[in-house]
Image (tube, rainbow over all chains, first blue to last red; front, side):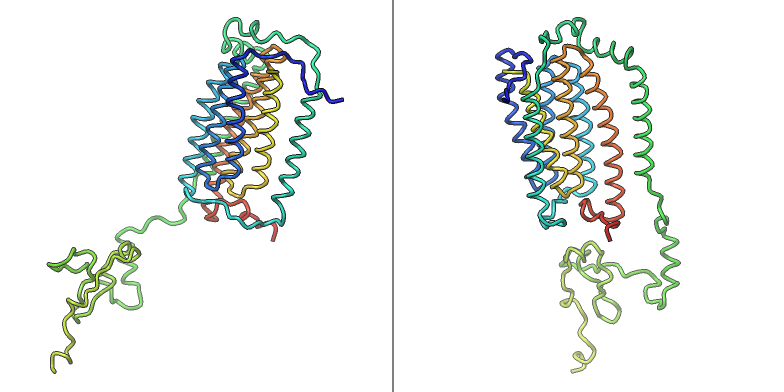
Length: 260
Length: 99
């Protein structure tokens, strides 16, 4: 028979209220992380889950870990995530078409099975020792207790972890470093490039935007000596935006029309 | 309330993270789901520390946090490198070996 009670002692009432309030919220936030379309919203929901986990740590007499959770995870790691999101593009949302057919239902069925397995395993486990809590271990303070463990029994692991941190930092620097294949074009390079072109039409530089009394100058194409508008005189940014005013009203009438 | 409820919560969060890793396409969200799984494991460690009434579980959780921080740094650097060369953060677009 399955007995759904790991006999590991019970908690005080305030902690159970805290748990029953925060645990559903954190599960909901984690589910929302899966369902929400934008990566930024996922990051915010994950931050919420992490903060509630920090509260659970503090409730479970792990004060040091709770503070570290807030400082390192919610502070540093989530900020790093948001930073990368800004770098990669804030609106890179998921595409909905599936690359592998029927991946989603298979994944959900497998995960539900896995979760059921975990939960039933916890439910069936028994623990044959009385729970005394961490009061003795935390007698001189939680941080002190962890420090004693870290610097005596786990000192080698601690050193290895420091080597790992340095390696990760150097690895990230190597990955992030990008050598420019060619330097930015200087004014001199641009000038040489103009003269190396096939025709020397723009050799003297592009015409500047027209100046007319009725208009803001930069969005009106200049008039060439022939009387035609020169679209190259408008900045590329304005061209891309489509902020160009027709300059036909300013064009000189064509020679034939004048002769008539 | 039994202390084991924390373990159930940890199992549920771990499962949700696992679903996310498989289902989501955006590599950053996949990465966040991995973080969620690590956090769920940490919660189990802290709970077991309490059950066993010694601090070793908390020390292990501390080490997990450090390793997770390293993993985030390197993983995000890889994502940025891939994004720089392919202009995409989707895990499905980085399937060049398949073809």
